[in-house]
Image (cartoon, rainbow, N blue to C red; front, side, top):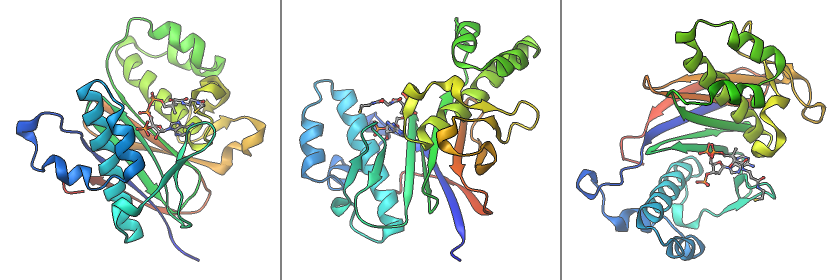
Length: 235
Ligand SMILES: CC(C)(COP(=O)(O)OP(=O)(O)OC[C@H]1O[C@@H](n2cnc3c(N)ncnc32)[C@H](O)[C@@H]1OP(=O)(O)O)[C@@H](O)C(=O)NCCC(=O)NCCS
């Protein structure tokens, strides 16, 4: 049996020219015609830059696993917007970005999702908890000391968002549909029936820098090797 792995790539999307060790050509050359055409449609330069760099980084990382030229790699989307590699292969991925940070999870386990959030206070946190957390999660969160609430809000949030991305439905599924086990927090106590049993799923709490909170969710009960890779602008 092939051994299972999950690699998480974590890095910055450098948007300032002076910080940039690579030329625009380096990024542009990873894109295919369709992606270049999409890049041309952005009217705001910053968003265009972000698209080009994120896509190029993603393709350069995936190309290493597939031992191929990034330009020839074709990404398609499911009807709900989940990207996947069009070529027949056993490599799967998901990505998330917040501000200038990105995370990319790459694995040979096919159902996976990842989310990164910036751990910062937000005005309507208890309103968001009411709306997006299940009753049991809400109860657990409300019982925490105030100084723990912001961190734990995001810890729960990223696990839930990684789940809805793993199943490919996105936020439309409803974040309150999957319930994180407040006791051990490394699994779910309930998920929608269509996606199997809660114990079929694993959660990885990924430790990044202090302000970045991240989780990966995967449908597997097999053992897997997990690695965190820092992307030093070399992908
Ligand atoms: C997926 C989703 C939860 C991401 O939320 P977010 O916190 O704003 O963004 P993140 O940075 O964490 O993730 C964005 C990435 O998720 C991926 N993604 C988008 N839709 C996805 C889905 N349904 N499942 C898994 N991953 C998805 C994309 O790669 C996207 O990055 P890209 O736009 O650079 O390619 C949210 O955008 C969503 O629910 N989208 C689905 C919308 C939908 O139902 N569309 C149907 C018509 S296309």
